[in-house]
Length: 179
Image (cartoon, rainbow, N blue to C red; front, side):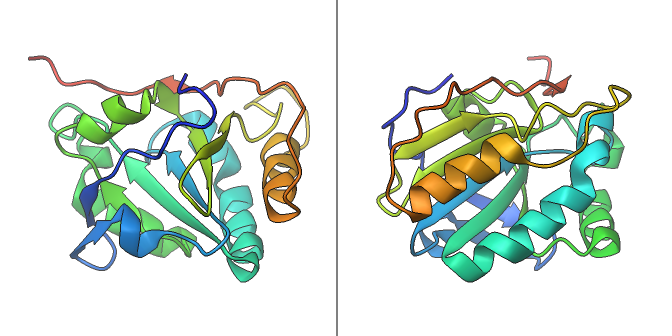
């Protein structure tokens, strides 16, 4: 996992929804930026999609921007390609850009391992949280409350240090290309 305090790796990626290139700089929030690695087909992401939309609608009013990135190999997993990403984002009303990392270099720069994977950066793009949304998983019966990530966001907004243990996210492995 990226060490806390690490500066956010810069990127320029294709936004599947707006059909335009986006950079980290033009997506940065005034108080913070949440970068999440997701995909369309992962059951762990499907499990939390509604919570992601609700979270984005809540935090974007507080100066936190959200940016979703899919880095899966779209040749091997066509349901995770740009066209499918666009229809998926529109169907679920994603209020955040859904970027396609075709080269997978951005996922590698972030040390992203699975979907979903969350990285919260402060206003200066320094990492303050990396880990899970909460303890809920498909089939475990725990509510999707976003507790871990929401606490980290609240700490960031209130300029408090997050002293809670940061649990790594659990989900589907990123589908890496065979070189």
